[in-house]
Image (cartoon, rainbow, N blue to C red; front, side):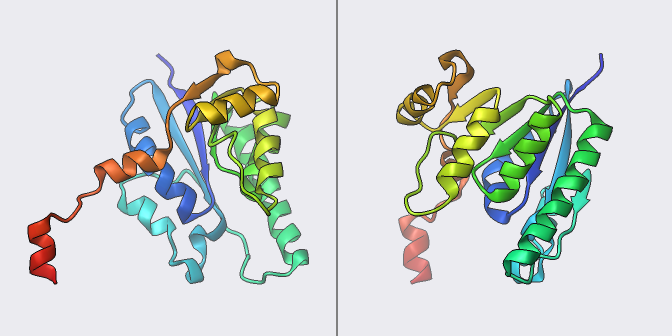
Length: 198
C-alpha cells in the first residue's frame, strides 16, 4: 500500500512546539509519510537555531528553506518571502503531497496556504476561528481558513466563527488547542520538589 504524504510546514519555534507531539505521532503511522518543511527563524542564530530541536526530537527534515531574515526592513521581508514562495512551490510540485497541514496565522503560513491552494493540494488548518486584536493576524488567519479543506479548532466558539465565515460544519473538528497536550505531558514539580529547590 502506497503511503499518503502529509506535508507539515514550520517556520518558527512557536509553531513547531505546538506541532511537535502531533508530528511524533504521525511519524509512527505506517500509512502516512511525513514530509517536514522547515524555514523561517528556525535557521537564525538570534532565535537559537531552533531547527536543532526538530532533529533532537528524532524527526527528519525533508526540506530546508533558509531565508535571510535578520534585516527587518520591508524590502528584505518581501524578498525573503518571495524566495520562500518559490522554493516551497517547487518542493510541493515535486513531492505531490496528499495534504498540507498548517498551524496558525503568520505571513509564512499564509504564503504556504496560497501555494498549496494554487496547486489544488487540500489544506488542514489548525487554529482557525481565533481572534487577535490589534494585529494583521486575523486577516491572515481568516484567509487561510477560506483556502482550507479541513479545520481543527480549539473550541465551540471558534467552530461557530468558522461557520459564520461560511465554512461547512462537517469539515470543522473541535480538537482542542495543541498546547493543552503539551501541558498535560509536562512533568510538573511536586510540593516536595519545590521545597527542595527553594
